[in-house]
Image (cartoon, rainbow, N blue to C red; front, side):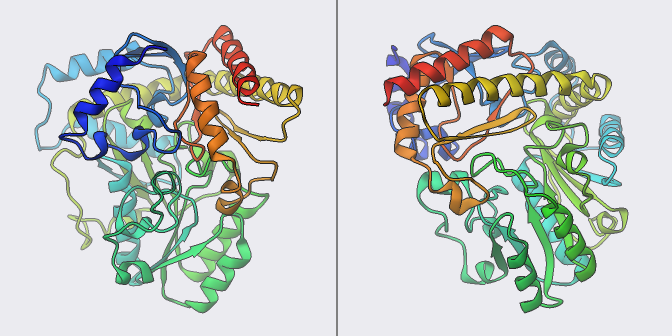
Length: 429
């Protein structure tokens, strides 16, 4: 595979951009080698600066659920830019998308638009603290909620990839207000609540973590969290930046039938444009300025281009529920195909699937939490990643990331991916 242009660009980038990238996982640190510089994408394919074409399973880390450059989205953006890129003032489109979000996600009674998932999670925790008058929060090990100070403690993918799970720059004061519990461990939650009675403002969790690989909740785990939070007056926050509108119209909370107090969103609601949102119960959201005392603002929040793209995306998903059926079928085909390849090679690796999210853990252990995920053979995954590239498939460049399917994937694409897995595992034996 020729990657001459990518090598040259990466060398050039390091002179002016820290590490040569604007987000750490892009640097290929956990898989080795030189990151690919991308120039275009269409449907299920992505093309790098050396004109190599790949079937891809990153999809901008989730939002390209319909595939790249889908006309439903691009037409909305093209129309919106003709009216200017930003006003710094309210628009009717913000009301339209807020109403649609509240309709699709019943737990959200009011919603505030922001510019990223990190903004959404930071803001949600601040509002929970303001609403409850408490300072502490519970965070689940391996769940990633962006790069806010409170979240960079046992933070999952990005931090693990860089080898700094406790980032310098996070103060001791911030760290002491963040209580940690393993995913799927309800006893630890009960212990933390007992030891910090009436001090915990919020429990924030990815209901389906996608940043320690894809890990699924055990039976009744999410409902038990809901029950504890209700009893103790703790605001339960579901971080659905990845899963919102991807696993179902109502996200993971619809799939598992558990209702949080607050929800954070991102990715898909911008159709690929920078966007985030947080919302929840009316009485909590009315603490947000200017309705209430908890301050949060953003010049570009609800900007007209992102709102146009997001509105078209959500309308399409709302009006075409068969998208979820089709994605689930594609996920099932891919998971079964990969499992058959693992069986063929007599490998004990674990495949996790939920809807259009999938992951192979390079371990023989069941993966129920962050500690289990860290038993994976990351060196072997790195070799596998590069073999997959050589076979025309672009995976997330980290063992600790979910793969995301798009509905642009064809049966032939899925067969190609399964065949590539077979060839790649054979090559790294």
